[in-house]
Length: 478
Ligand code: NDP
Image 1 (spheres, rainbow, N blue to C red):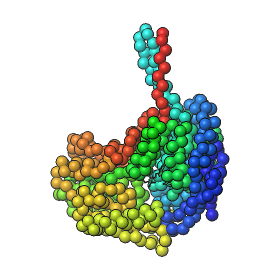
Image 2 (image 1 turned 180 degrees about the horizontal axis):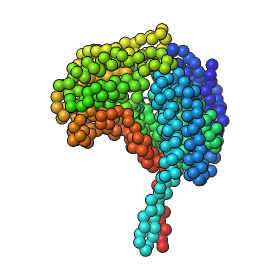
Image 3 (image 1 turned 90 degrees about the vertical axis):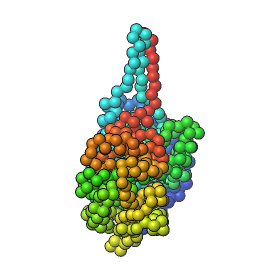
Image 4 (image 1 turned 180 degrees about the vertical axis):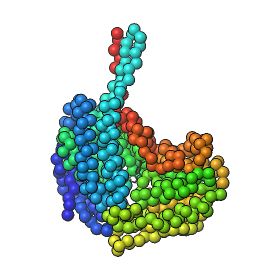
């Protein structure tokens, strides 16, 4: 059985406790590897390693830091197939998706921030005849990067890359459900020439080792992506020590379909946005709000395409929809479907567990529900699975009110051919990310993050570089 190890000071090592957790393969339900059950003692070792590496890493010329990160991006590309297979096995996601999205994006994250630091400029403010101010962006020191299981390497590197690029040393913790590609990243980091201690990767349980990272006084900032409840705990702990936090949390995202849109394109993209990665993406559109005059036409086209989705063995190249992450999560999703029935919803397609090719894993059919009040639980709570609800509306005002009617505010897709309406509605929807006539079209320079209970702060581009640094103004009298 494969034993995953922590990566500290450039070395792979077992946890101080010598205890390991079981790691399940979602497609089969079998245990296939063991993950360190790390704790405070491992965090202390990682902090010590990061402290000894910080001075030379932060003072390395930017061009040299950039060169190492570019090399790491190249190595991820070189090992794309191996990484994609590992990601698919660890998450249950289709191998084709891991190959097309997860792993290329991990390489792109390093490449993007390696280039961004080379082009990043500091600012100067001249007080004519009196003084000159210049503001440097100083690295923070040691930072914690904690990421979830749905897009493991993609989201882990989205934090680690800007943190390293700005000259920080990192203690990273992937989800204990999906440790494999972060473990493999350690080996590639060494090969890329990343000095020992600059990147440390600890595995284990969130409330144990994750929390120990958040609580350690030498860790200056926490970048976290995960559930809203966990974000609340982390926010409180960090506030106690006045730590910087960036919280990317849950969503209950609306797709708003106006009658004048390109319906064919809206249907095709809404199927993707509802069911990509089995609905386990924080940006998935789980509430489809449809203008009443095209409701039936949209529904008919949407259901047809959902029935055609190729659900099954994630290791087959033509599979579009794989297994959910864990038995617990599958039961949570099935529980929501049961509740939707109790609350008066009609299941139009899906609704149950399946066993494609007799696999014993955690497969739930893509599920479409209608007839539920916008305020009922399935339209309010994040299911984070393959469940989508159709809701009709009859005026623009009503569409905006339903779109805004949850505690979340991560993303929204607006579908219309009327440009004025697109802007008008976009400005009134309380979401950090708005797409018009598209979904998940990402430019890494743009600010990314949520409003309301979907998060605090923004990632991406300059926002990430600012988060992982401290502005220091130096005023020199003439
Ligand atoms: P969790 O909040 O359960 O976990 C996220 C990470 O935090 C994991 O590594 C977890 O470890 C760790 N963790 C858990 N408890 C603590 C703690 N007390 N202190 C420190 N770390 C802790 O989220 P999931 O992994 O279940 O991911 C799904 C959630 O992530 C969904 O709500 C989804 O919307 C959100 N998400 C948000 C995104 C965004 O950009 N806004 C993007 C992707 C997902 P462990 O796994 O061991 O519990």
